Amino acid sequence: MTAIACNACALRKIRCNREQPCIYCKSKGMSCLYTRHQQKRGPKNLYPKTLRRIINQGPKSDKIISRERIEELLGLYEKYYYTIWPVVSANLIIENLESAEDNLSLDVACLISAVLLNQPSFVNSFYQSKLENPPKAVAYDLVLKTTKNLNDMSKRFLISENKVLCYYFLHVYYRSCQESNEMSKLYLREAITAAHILGLHDPATYDDMGKEEIHKKRKLYYLLFIAERYMALNCRLPLLLEASIPLPEISEEKDFHRIDGFLEIIKLVEIPSSDIYDLLSNRKSIVDQIELTRIIKEMHETFATKYSDCMSYLDIANISLYKCWIQAVLLKEAFIFFIRDPDNLNTYAIQMAQNFLNTITQIDPVFFEISDSGDYSFLNAILKFFKSVAGDTVELENSYELDVLRLIIKNCSNSSPNLWYTSIKSQITSNHVSEDIGL
Image 1 (cartoon, rainbow, N blue to C red):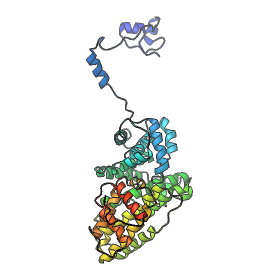
Image 2 (cartoon, rainbow, N blue to C red; image 1 turned 180 degrees about the vertical axis):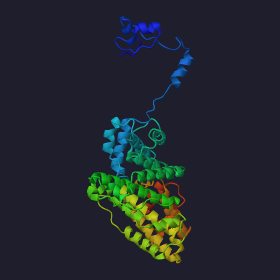
Image 3 (tube, one colour; image 1 turned 180 degrees about the horizontal axis):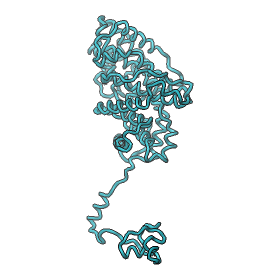
Image 4 (cartoon, rainbow, N blue to C red; image 1 turned 120 degrees about the vertical axis):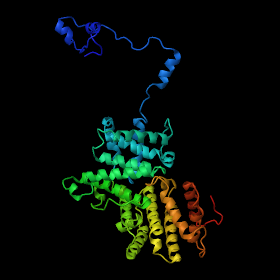
């Protein structure tokens, strides 16, 4: 079949089926020849100004980022972020990219890339490739493109694990955009709804699956479980997910050390009972004081847990932030009504500060800034708690721990977390807190 009509059909201006011979010439017993050259369409002459306008306003390529850049970012995800979001095999996604132009694998890859590019500290520290546009602009364009694909009506109601992942990483992306909290909540609800449709919350769903598939789906479910509890404490949302299925098993992971931190976070967010989350979402007004005491004690015991030698710095930073943040939120918003003794509350604050700062002395501040939250909500909640406990001054006995607390409170208003961490780390490492420290 040729690209143009045969000579006879073109002369008669009738439709040609472009076969050899075509149906018209065959019916007439004529020779079917294709010696004619296709004529150029459009005006023969264009003014230079018109020609320039056509060139400048012509359709632009919709390729936002090259395939090589996506593969590079997936490699960085595998190296740094898999332990936090252990639900995507970068190697498998890369293998599927060749045939992924019209499926969700490419969308998942684009959204992971967008999440990483939207973090300035990550880009500056680990991503050395040059992009034609600023990384945040590239991230935004990738999100718009994948959102359009997800809203395609022919695919809108097709639910799959990749669809859940797309919604989840859209949630993470918007969570890191401080002005887009409502979008973040919306996409998390979309991910949870899709997970419910797939039955990831139901133990019976896993009955006929192999071990590898069970492990993969459990990790995806508990990723949403962690995210929902984060949003429940941060945005006062009611809970939809419960720990209704067994935890992922370390033995099923190829490199079991890579989900140590993930399992630790699950245990942390499980410590507050559903009643506590109900209290904070204003659906209940009474919580058993014995339960509150148990949670405080358990959080302190969990703080004493030693980190695995194989755990990455990003995992340690992430766990430390989660621990201190959960304690700060619960003490400030719920427990403070049950703790009548100010000295007792100050004791909790000092212990929290000491444990948290003992951790950050070991770690580069950038790992705190690129943690799972993707924003500074962890840090802000911790600082607000310290400030609510002690105000602008701490009128207690002099001690190194109290100096640490004063230092934190003094830097509450600082807008640069990197400088904040670096300054406090240097102070604590030297085992001396300067009286006139200020940023």
